[in-house]
Length: 254
Image 1 (tube, helix red, strand yellow):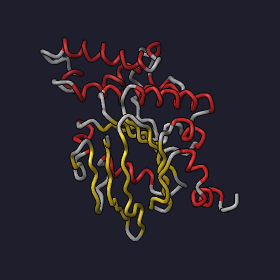
Image 2: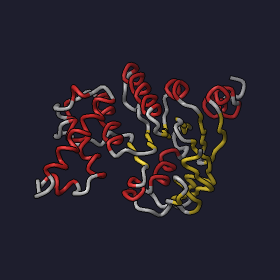
Image 3: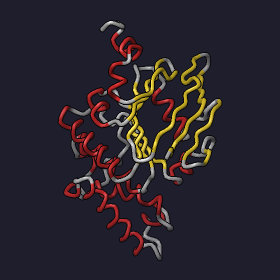
Image 4: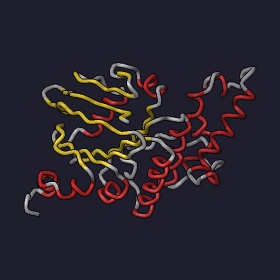
């Protein structure tokens, strides 16, 4: 079943057409990657899907509902969560507290009321803490719960970011370059975590430059070049696609 369907997306900045008539679907419980050279329009595409940028034209249908034009927080509330290339944790808060921030989006009282310890929030705050710890344990980083996020290794911070996104219990995750800045071992661990997230029944759409990671974990791949979709296929077929090879290597015969 298709969980996300984008059709005819267009976005320009002045005279630059950043995304041009892009469309594809994402099936439930799958990992789909979006790849392409720098400037291909990948992050712009994510911004359009998540509501961070308004689109010029086209449609974004998530779980059967058109979401283009909605505020990002409303889109997140419908089950579409996102991480960013630059990790956006609160460095002075513990790993657990960072995950609790993500969990507060599903609370009745809300984040501010919980932080101020207003009447009636203590029981809910306890439940949020317990549930947030479950997500850290799920990603095998429960031992980091009480450590300040700013003190964690980069790969550990990425895992905490994943846990915070999962705390909102999304149906789908958009991951923007999850391996950015990671070494080889950290990248392999992130790939394992992304596969684990998919195995939990959460659909994943990711933008990534690390081709080894993409080929290892993706069920399908979309290729963008200069804002246009030039290919969409299984990883093995993408590896043999002459146009993709030409764009990446500059030689059709490579």
